[in-house]
Length: 521
Image (tube, rainbow, N blue to C red; front, side, top):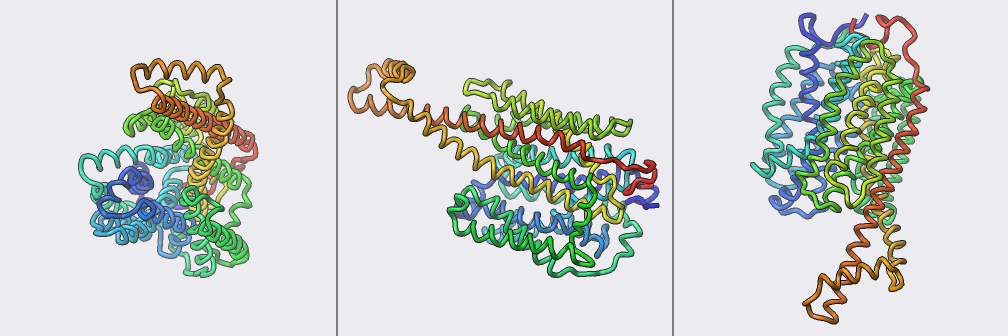
């Protein structure tokens, strides 16, 4: 029988609060700095390409640590490693806020990413052990409320703090919560016996290869669009290193007696399918998160604050439906059914986004996002609650690290692909639309008449022609960009819908619920 992650007198809800608090801060820090970059750039006299390393360095360190969290917890003890991670994250937040130069800030962000990377898989593993198997849906609802809502709240909080205080307070705000989380973890969390019995085995090649492979991959995803992908020698070089390192990593880990990441958990079909669905689900989800505010700001003229308001209803819907999904699972609802409904709802919301036009009002833009919020809750909770159902408790930390890594990578791939597709489809539509800009096009003649009437009283000749051409060019750009947004949302809708049949491949635990691996009792 497995032991709970907390002391016998400790409520599972106190345990949940203990691990969710630092995890929420860590996930929010992946997006909270985005809106502060222009202020950081000016304050530290850095170029735009240089200042983006504030984001990239954090993501790279995060990606390297997440998959090896289970191994680190087994070597140093889960409680000790949890406290160390929160402490490192908190101290490095202080260093980020006090950084006198960009170089110091980037180093501090690397340390912050190394400290924060382990918090997501550690929290998930502890929650799955603190709650009985029948309540895993409830546990993942609590976890999901933090993981899904934090990236949405991040830009809003970061923008408000930066505008009203200073960019350094984006980091300083972590200090009191970090100190509180360390104290709570020290008092309330304990290691299960199987972790205390673990022995030190260092898979040096595995550690080296995964650090190089994931580090290069994250840089490629973050910098690829800016460097024009394969037209850049820098991106090509990192891509080759990434492919070679990760290929060798898989070979080494499958042969190692004590691998740093045990890939054998993929032998369980439910776990393997769950990870595929998680990767692709967050691929389309985060791609949409980037596109919708971009559409509102660049084409509809919304401010950053109002673009944030568009995302807000979806966050509220997710916060409402996640606990409901957990309760439904506790009362016997089939996770596969809830997951299918969630994916279908997300697909419908993305299809509605693909129907947006340049005449859409606020309600028309926010409604698909609101519907998507319900889909997210019915997607994340049953998926996270059922993916681990056949994983032995000794493998829970390892499996959680892999699951969270693929979730993060799915989001990174989605953001990179959405930006690239948007640029390419916009150029394609622009070339097609330009073909119709001829004197024989009745729509163009009508538009020219409208511009001429608007310019009545201005100087004739060259000024008039330039105004007309500028107006036509701006309209071509707007229309081509709108069509590009429609295309990408349409593609993401069908990719999400294609995940629904995969839910049929997921198997539930065949033993009695009380015996299910990973339970707390």
